[in-house]
Image (cartoon, rainbow, N blue to C red):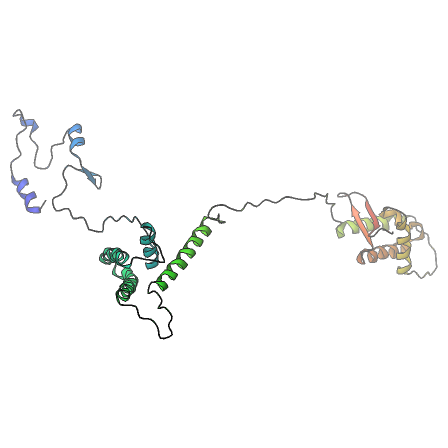
Amino acid sequence: MTPSAVDDRDDREPPAAPGGSADAVATPGEAATPEPEQLELKVVARLYGEPLVKLPQDLYIPPDALEVFLETFEGPLDVLLYLIRRQNFNVLDIPMAEVTRQYLAYIDEIRNRNLELAAEYLLMAALLISIKSRMLLPLRKADTGEEVEDPRAELARRLIEYERIKHGAQELDAVPQLGRDFLRAQAWIEQAASARLPDVSPADLQAAWADIVRRARLVQHHRITREELSVREYMTRVLRKLQDRRYADFDELFEVERGVPVVVVTFIALLELARESLIEITQAEAFAPIYVRLAYQPS
């Protein structure tokens, strides 16, 4: 509807409602509201939520507004193979006239829509026309006496090879693929559940050592002697004490009655053995007794 038509409509006097009632006359700023049943019957479309009771006369629909693709081809060879297989032609004996005619008809269709896409198809069309023209010429034998190869032989080889690759690709696509058809399930299963004992911290060793030193001072004797103590000797003593025992209490390895020097050397011997991984120092839980055992079992 043009603007001039709208102006002419606004300048006219509003028509009288049926029955001649003055109250039913619509003012220039208001439009008569149709009945719901009437509106439902007349509405043919909605534009931005507003009902349209009549399609515009100047409605323009582009020619490419809707396209339906019934067949999708991967290239010129795919089109040729489709035309041959649809009509049950023999690939080794292709009727070039009929196939070329159908192929050119398909080229005309896609050339009207997409010229760039039709470029590679035009090259195949030129090859088909060339093969067709060579078949019209009389065959001449070669100088060597061998038969001249059929002009369609090279095209037939390409079509057979393409069909084989296409079928292989379809079979590969039918195989379930990770991420497309299924997902890999991952689950963590603990094979062997073993109880982990708490590790002995340096603070625990320090507390046990302080307790042993305190008890050693309670029973120490005042002797004025000089005794040379060997750490290696006490390391051997500790190993001998643990040799025939499964484990020993930490306190049992110290000879408290011999004084603080012996206790100190024994403690250093234990630390050396632990550093060399000859013994293991374990504790069942916090503040529990500390046990010492050999790191290896004698055969």
